[in-house]
Length: 132
Image (cartoon, rainbow, N blue to C red):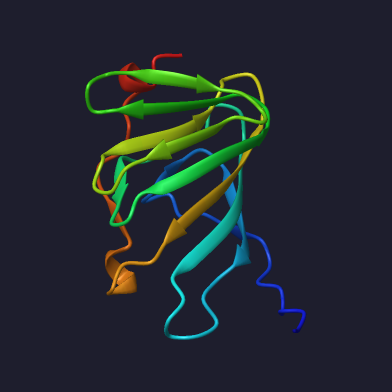
């Protein structure tokens, strides 16, 4: 048993996010047989991810604020604190904060066999797709 070193807060890159978004890694694999990654992600009002998908799916548990999650069919789901959204493997989606509130969620996912293929980033979400 051990206390793991912290990773520090990192501002996410503009190639993958619109607006200000910060991530704190909570848990990362410490051995080759482990895959789980947990991150606390904080979004400024109106900030959002680009379109992306995950090789093994993702759980997003909202802890503060109001979150929006969108899919390629044009559905936008509002998720509130205490609720968890699941996106299956390979499903294109985006996450965002409502326009007038900060939002925080815990992201839980498993690395792909090749960790570089865990998350596949795509184009930015348009204002029309965000819709708010």
